[in-house]
Length: 539
Image 1 (cartoon, rainbow, N blue to C red):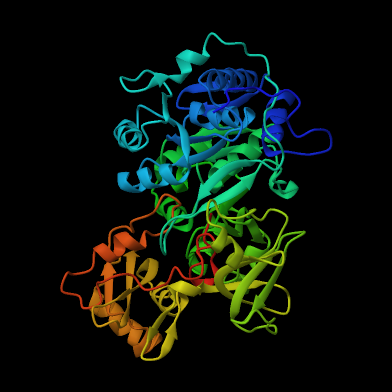
Image 2: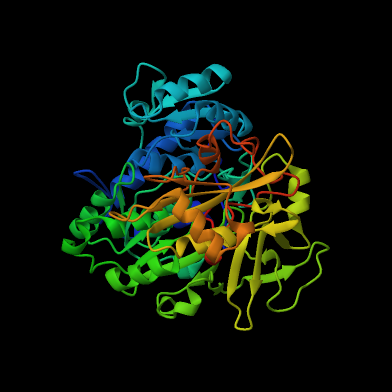
């Protein structure tokens, strides 16, 4: 830890950096409300002064260029602003979600090479103690009064609000983002300071952040601030609170994984809520039923926006609001963004013809520089400028991408390949089913078995036996899962997509296939994978 603010070591003229983009956006309209949280409001000027004071406090604590800061917090103004503060003095930041199992948090903090743990005493004190015990040399700093760790806000309060000189260089690692780990252990993705943002994603807006800060919603919040907009923070997702915030604060943008979007659509307050301010409802994350997407357009307006997005690459494709009016396109993930190329290859890496199913490869200026502390996996996934995603899909003649499923989410049953969409698509066609997800297990006999979990529409009960009969008729015997769990709600990971490990834990103990999950870590988990109907998994 250097604890030094290096004058002149920033991006330099002509080099755009992510941190400078956010801070410049705050400086352009300093008197506007930049953050709303609860009943409080923070101006852009106050945000800048907080960032600069926090940066000086972190440097005074001995942190500097190349050190790792791990943030364990919810959606608060302090958590949002401590990230650019740490970046300003050259630190890389890893954001962890307090709802992860504590053992996972400890492992991720160790992997991130944490020099300082910054935590929210209202949410993460217990986990912070466990992490600190495992990392005795790490500084422990609290975002507020705490009996454990120094109060970073108190340390920052008397310091100068003048901007310190940036201590980072464009090619330094700005952030380590961990993938969801839905098919294996989470992997750290390296992000540089010089990561170019996509201009089409930056727009002055009032953005509602109701999902985890460490994933796509946090990036969108940064882009809103960079464009001169406002971020409305909610500590967690609740459909009623989301609707209330949309009406009260005239929210124009919100990010909702499909399972959260469904809860908004099903909430009894929706018909009486003024949602006319909405301009973009972005969804990624997992399966989205075309029928529900059409319903969303009918009820919310021409605002639906899909991206096929990877932690390793950022947004790759988009399906625009106007394209959502064509029912044929609702099963696709849209077309590639500008400056982005998508191709489909076979197992040997050879280019496949239009319409053929193969691995999705991506070339984009926003791709990662590699995995954190994993050069072997980086070499397998990044080849000749292309990112091999591990997702299977096909391109049509118009350039629309349909995502069939993750390569390692496929199950082999009676020598047949079964993909998530083979199971989820027929289930989602049942009138009582609102959500469906396929998952696989490998039993003690080493045979793979397919399972599914569904939730049902309010007032539309359905039994497992009825769903098996439906699957026999619609999907055929091979696609009829061994077990179909009918649940009140799906367990979700912090990214908002189904938690497959939690679903496997719900299987009956006597289930012969209830052993380890199917799928392999041999290739990669290049970001969360797609679900059925061409739906993309978010990063």
